[in-house]
Image (cartoon, rainbow, N blue to C red; front, side):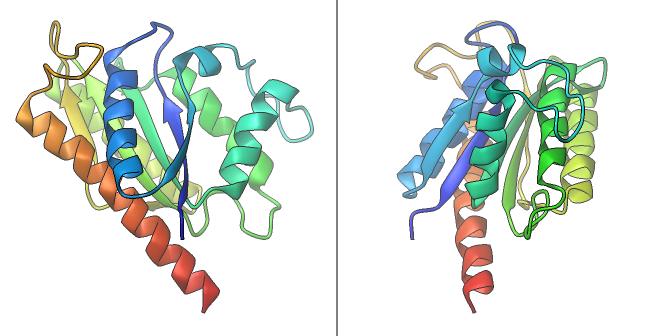
Length: 190
């Protein structure tokens, strides 16, 4: 089985640490055989504010349909003022369109989480908020959540400046979301 993973995250700044962290986890998921669809910061920045079921425009519907068909997700959010950015939260609000599905919200889906910030407190608070949102949406957060403390020039476009701690966390999240997607899919097949 080829797990279908949807990756959501980033900031309004192209090449942000949040997006590069997400791409590192994506690379690990793809190395495990997953097919990954990315909805990055540029995509999220173009999403209008979520207005409720029945009001999703074509741009947001593409992401909702990808999640509907997904076996798992990767979500990467920056810590803004100690919590998830409005950009990422707005994207997650679009998942309300899945409420009346046979498999509502994120039910039966593994979800790998990444929180980035300049300080440890913000990364931990952002991670806790992401876990709370995923639980509320009936998703299964992976055991490992990557909390990445960002510093100047931490990431290059190729990711070669990434420290070992951060790299190993991101790779583990990528692998765990694929393993979780496979496990949860096999439970649904039985």
